[in-house]
Length: 120
Image (cartoon, rainbow, N blue to C red):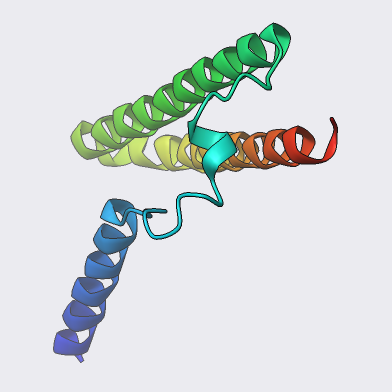
């Protein structure tokens, strides 16, 4: 019974590490994604500025969410047993917020791409 729990824990850990470290590459057909990576002069200056601001906000939001979860994890590790229950309650809120920030930044990027292609 104990070996099964260890095996499941190891497998889940490996899957999580692979998901975190995985990387997607769009290198096969670069013509499809030409407007994303190349500035072909079709964008207005407002669209360029909005793209830069969106990128900065996404990076800052993701960095703050990641740092917050890491700090909370460190506090959990070094805290006493009485404080761990309080930290677990806070962790649910922080992790939910981090998921919302990551999902929102992805959705905003998708909406931006849709708008760039369909609204001309």
